[in-house]
Length: 196
Image (tube, rainbow, N blue to C red; front, side, top):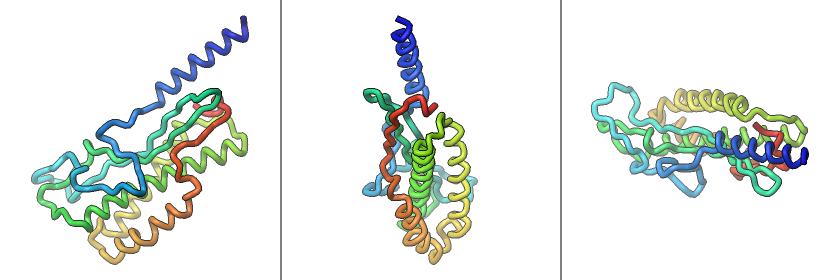
């Protein structure tokens, strides 16, 4: 009886945990996929006479959810583009160069998602339990912010065409390739008590 009660409490806890950390992808969100490229139609906000110096802003982030499957947990870590919070300035030239620049912000977010997956997998392999996912995600949000800032600075927000071509054709593809082992958004975890 005692064991059943403990199991019931544990399952209830996991369901609560899954619900609290699971963020369902909505129609306004696009999960990163190498075969899907952003279009100007993905930008749902058009700002007229924006005081911003930017021509467009892509709202991207890394999201995770936990799902219990049989006796295992499935951790899903994804790079997301949010259509409803991404905008383009109405006075901007809707150029392919600018759109490519914004696509690379999304690609950088996928690089960070892969780094996050890699870290979780390494900690699980080294039996470093439990893993505080919120704390770990916070670390990778910081890394993402630095990478986005560096990318914008080096490309002068897409205006330095030579640097833009280098980031688009070499730097970001190499980062993705170096982390291709972690390209699957799903991480199977045999011990659900290892993550919170």
